[in-house]
Image 1 (cartoon, rainbow, N blue to C red):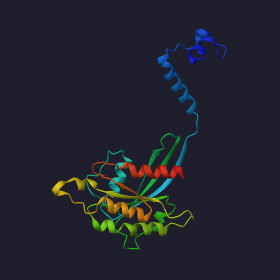
Image 2 (cartoon, rainbow, N blue to C red):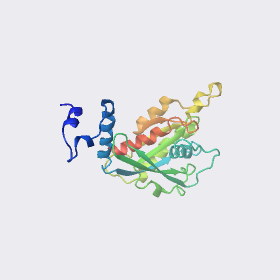
Image 3 (cartoon, rainbow, N blue to C red):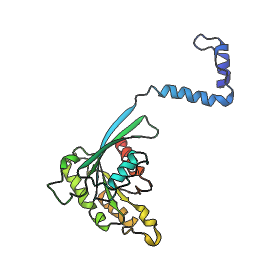
Image 4 (tube, rainbow, N blue to C red):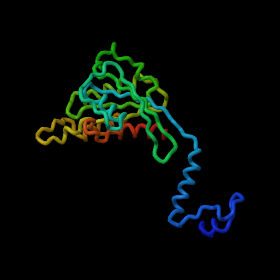
Length: 228
């Protein structure tokens, strides 16, 4: 028996037939969808919290990436202001097809003190769930510092027996590869991908200036945290 004939013949909750909604077949799907929304609206919402340490040399664009992600792509910093300690913000990421969200606690760490152990405060890395290491594709020096940054974060985090700290390697400023004769990129994609694989990180390419793929590394970490 079809849904249409069933609604037409049976009584529900003591109501007479005339009190039931008269739905055209084209509206049945919409009606069923609304019923489904009513049922799922009572499902408890799950919110998880994950700490992310964002590291890399100064001027690679860590703060710009963080601000663009946090603002939904609407706040690219016009002027460079060097982070001298740690900047902190929180962004909630909804996990598709679930009732869950992950709040990413983003710790944007200063880039100038990697070689000054007295200034590097390792407490910022405590309880870190993921690390994001950023380099500038136009700076070979920032690329060569990646391993040092990763080692610093991983060595500052107590071992949990679950393997090395997971995370992402982000090649930023890829817009500089598209400048034709003015292109300034000196680190190509394959080099970045190879290094990421060696370090056990996922590889992403972004441009904080244009907003290109800025969300992808953050969404990846949120999804991984939810899955694990």
